[in-house]
Image (cartoon, rainbow, N blue to C red; front, side, top):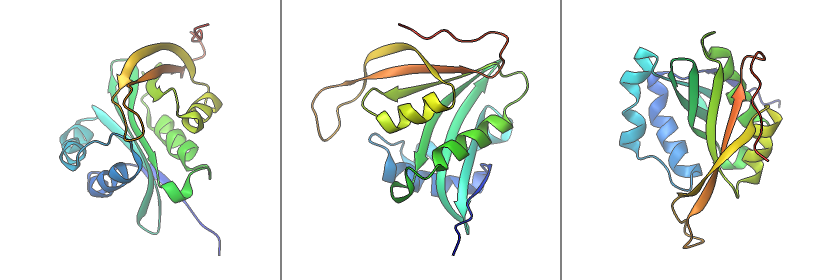
Length: 165
């Protein structure tokens, strides 16, 4: 039996499943109320999102916000049991396909310890452009705050991003 995964734009009625998946996969998840609270902004286009699903079951998501010529990825999640199967790449590519032609740059933050996400983002042409010291709160495994890598990707090749040394 083949597994057909479908990527598509996020809809407001996806938000309850997004909230459930966010809670299951993130170290410091948004609350259900926070996820459901983006509904009005999905309608206005201030927030955009994409999902990957199979038979109506949400398996991956990305939530981002746009402002002027920039897009900031706020949260990406893939069901734990399906990590490493290309769903993260698929959902991000879906998001990129939805971006307005006015969007020139996409930004995100990622924990320095999240090597699988870093590899995914680098494979999608994101480059590290800086760090935020102590950005992430301590997790159950540590009492230390964790740095964030700031990464960016130009959608336009006219102005390529230069990586930090």
